[in-house]
Image (cartoon, rainbow, N blue to C red; front, side):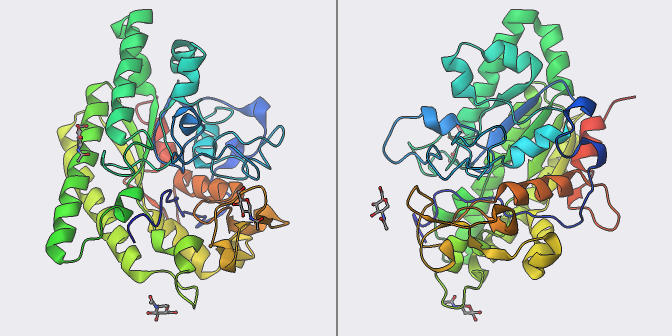
Length: 372
Ligand SMILES: *[C@@H]1O[C@H](CO)[C@@H](O)[C@H](O)[C@H]1NC(C)=O
Ligand SMILES: *[C@@H]1O[C@H](CO)[C@@H](O)[C@H](O)[C@H]1NC(C)=O
Ligand SMILES: *[C@@H]1O[C@H](CO)[C@@H](O)[C@H](O)[C@H]1NC(C)=O
């Protein structure tokens, strides 16, 4: 599988509809911010344009048609691996913002980092990025570098408004972290010992990033755990039956479980930290089992792609494009449609019952933590 998947998407979809209520949809007028700003770290599921500012032939970029064909306000390829908004946009929306904060490299190039950091937040997410620096090395901003960019953002905020004000903003802000899928395709662990060794380094660097963010003053961290990467069209197409790849899903499930238990034992050692960890397997289970119930005609094929299941080629100008994008769970061979991202974000904010895909609290409860 080495090199097979460069951009592994989050494959969460709705478990229960309509969990978000008043903040959902486009009712701008009623929007109320739950947090002062949002800071986003992660991979292609969250990237809103950082990779467009990286140099290199092999950098994954969603900067051409048909990406962005449904982008709100006018078709535009913004760097999002989606036909419109991605899940970072919807999470930001449910937190009271118009969409995801702008990409760090865009803000830097426009000399607008500080105003954005103070008022909306910053996105460091980069397609192809992994927990490890070695994952797709040279063609993305790895997690460790995203964390360093956050540290320099914090330093710039302190220089602008002083340490006290900066730490107030950061403590109330929502930090969104979604990464890990890309790492699973870099190494192909053969033995149980290989798997253990891989998980050990991944978990150790993941928790190190959480500790670093905490050290910078983050007190609300929402995490999206790795999901069923064996179910994306690009992987399904490898099997003549179009079935999910069980081995990949088992590996991802193992990592998700390891991350969950590591974060659960880490958090109590970080006083004042609240967190929410989303279970992407639980979130997508219902949709894969019954796509129609979530309003999809397809949960196994790409809307924009080539060949069987749309899973034989990237989404490009000359690809086949489906008619009703909202009826597909996948836009390209790896990434969610705007509609699937919206449903997934709703599930993360949903408190349950009957079910909650986040633990120990929902994203909404996390946003409201410490507020009176
Ligand atoms: C793990 O994280 C540290 C600190 O962020 C970083 O310096 C290091 O390169 C990372 N290790 C790997 C293997 O990516
Ligand atoms: C293909 O999928 C079927 C289930 O539909 C499974 O039994 C089989 O093992 C898969 N083949 C490979 C090569 O993974
Ligand atoms: C589509 O475009 C790509 C890149 O421009 C090209 O390599 C490919 O051959 C084209 N495919 C078809 C079916 O025209």
